[in-house]
Length: 477
Image (cartoon, rainbow, N blue to C red; front, side, top):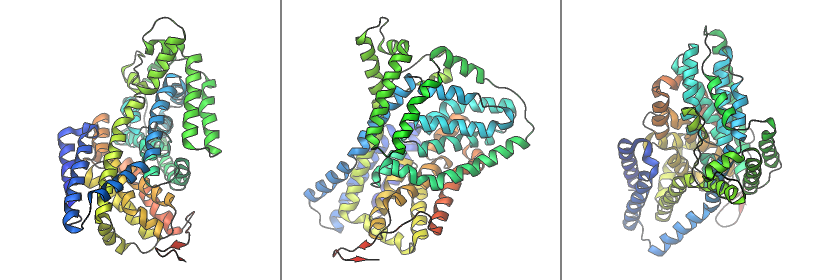
């Protein structure tokens, strides 16, 4: 009976993906979660007597626990807009483009996508814009579409996974109760080695293939130069942000200060863009104020003369984060219903029969994330459900929460693009014009990450256990 709400959710989300496609996250998934929550409450009423007040308290507690994540997501929306309009991200793209040579095209594409995705925090945006351009360039060079798409997706998801601007990274850390930058640092132990292996394969493939051609990198570079003031001095902002991250400042403080720095840079280096966004031809404080406020909270479109580049520099601000925030609230409601009715614990008892040690527990978490990606076709739902199911178990067995958040990211985030009916797989295959089954063998990073997560857990590297506190307050090892 405890599995009935999951069956309902799987059926509803499957129908939503079939009907709405890429627009599933615009509201259909959220409605599905609330409907599944209602089913959970109904099943729980017959299985376990539960008052409505108890359910409301659980929902309030669950949603309140996500308040920091919601604030961070809003800041991420603002930083995405300010870093783009200020010319920081365009500057990085401009200099990154210059490394694209045919012999090292595959590894360069992966590195460039990783850099852009790391800066903007979105694998979808990177693939849908820069990835499309790289597909054309790679085809002109003579590479097969599977190799090109694999290098693009590898880099895009590496950057997305480690970016403090990524909604999936913020989501995985917040639902697991781990500080954002603690979560990112801990992922380096599994993420960097697998990415290096992937880059080595791309490098060897590029050097051994007989390809020739040039591509249209110059068009992108000319569009960036024509639209933005490109200068190495703009890179001081990400450098200062990196220093703040290294000094372990709170993520909200780092993001807020990064926004302020970008606002100052935008007003100094890109005043004409700010006036265009404000839709005012004259200068003055009023135009600057209006323009920068819109950059922070709303959508901005900048005309560069290159259609694909226009998509890349388009930002959504805080408003663009609202579907994700909406999804978080609805998912937390579903989790609260499962927890209050005891259904989550019932399902966990079945899974945990096979999780005896560290490796098997991590393997169970990774397997759950992959299963949720296959069954519910959405990485956000997979991250939240996998974390909710295992959170108490990791704590009761004395494992750090960062091990749980890393296991969720190593599975749910990166494998979503490998599943044809998942929202990620559906989007990327459609945007790149390459079937999922075609690029899947070349997405080395995406299927090595879950394996690395289990292997590292088996070795016990950087995994510590604290004394286990039983319900009676007595510590045991």
